[in-house]
Image 1 (cartoon, rainbow over the protein chains, first blue to last red):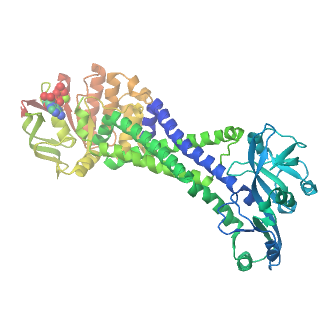
Image 2 (image 1 turned 30 degrees about the horizontal axis):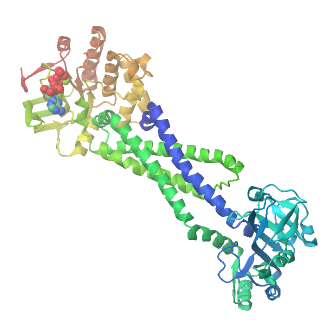
Image 3 (image 1 turned 90 degrees about the horizontal axis):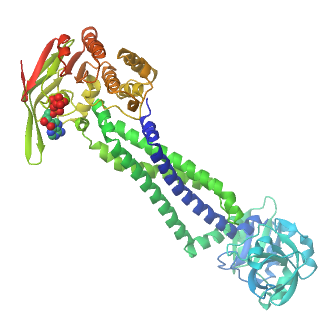
Length: 374
Length: 223
Ligand SMILES: Nc1ncnc2c1ncn2[C@@H]1O[C@H](COP(=O)(O)OP(=O)(O)OP(=O)(O)O)[C@@H](O)[C@H]1O
Ligand SMILES: [Mg+2]
């Protein structure tokens, strides 16, 4: 079978290229926007996902990891004695003001634990030794802090709520959705910084024994600590992300972007197919006069829409792929989620076919006798 | 056997408030294996009549029968199927598809008529050779002369062995030698393949090959 659909598209090469670019940019718009959003969202739970704990205990109704609230640091003992728990430790996450050398102040999200190493936290240490944190008023700063707090060297001192602490290391990849720089210090040195934290913690993280029934352990912790929320790592990670999607309007904003991207793609395909169909109307008339039915011509238009959609999706996908390293240079994380890409491609195809409907109507009512009009 | 019959065909076109009547009661019949010419002055309604016989246009009144079936003008599917199964049409304006090569134009028409793949390709090639375009298979219509395009249009109608060939001005753009060859081809198709051929023409030479001559004047056939 002669592939008339493709041949007509290639016959109008420039128009076809413009269409594919248009669809491609629309697809890239959706993929890049969503990828950046998901990248940002990934930061919202990055510490939860890396910390080697299956269960998290938080003060009741804590909305996400950044907005922590305090409870007694002695509760941890009640958790440690639960059957199936291998170990449990306090974790403080708290915003602390840090004075910069130029006199300005920045909020730092401080993570405090007694035994970071055992929990795999922080997961990438570029400089310094984690064990040293326990030896005094020391802090490790993530290198992403450079943007907010200026460059720093290991060995520098910074003031945290008026107390000097020495930077003894540099980590990488520890981020927060709030974009506040992340720092690590010994639990006790953080507690000493502010009276609010005296004898308090914000989380208890729990590592289970191999083969322990996680649900049973959670039930037991809930029974023993009724004024806390006890979540699986997955739920806690999910909730921390969801908070930013729903409570900030960011989710809605993203939905608008996706909607606009889809509209652009539909309009481009519809407009191109329509003008191409109108231009080739005489040929469609001839095909009808030779004996082709409407179904045959629908097939041609549907195939053109499909080709435009697939080429557009490839261009859009390629563009997004190429943009990923560029974005990374700008410290923007662009996440590629195969499922979402697939959905975007299927959506592009469906919308392109929908756009072809407008042209279907034109050829359906086309009278083959039009071939005799000059 | 009668393959095409028209009884008392009338055709009016309305242009704004005016109606012009082009055909005023045309009746004719065409037999298998017969080649007939239709002559008449420009604007006399030759193309209009041919397109009604070919089920591309519908008459204002009157009956068309194709291979013994009455064609209901209100049934677009029947009209389409009849065009597909029974009619090969050579358009006065060629109506080639510019995005396809000469041979693809022929092959595509075969595809529409239900022949696919290698079989269609072989048939298209055979017919292209028959009209003397063996060396122009891959040319684009825009790179061809009027006469060459006309021959592609003819090849497209010949391919697929439709029992009825309706041909509008086939020799208008051909030199006299090629015209003779094409007319001889039509005659041979009528004789050896038992097709019915109706040729609209101004060309007096056509009379040499046809079995009958029909003349149309003022919307009527006269002998
Ligand atoms: N769709 C139409 N609408 C209005 N008038 C039409 C239409 N088609 C044809 N006509 C008119 O019908 C008349 C016959 O046209 P037709 O094309 O059948 O003539 P013809 O005999 O084929 O002429 P020629 O030898 O120049 O090809 C002309 O006056 C033409 O203007
Ligand atoms: Mg004419």
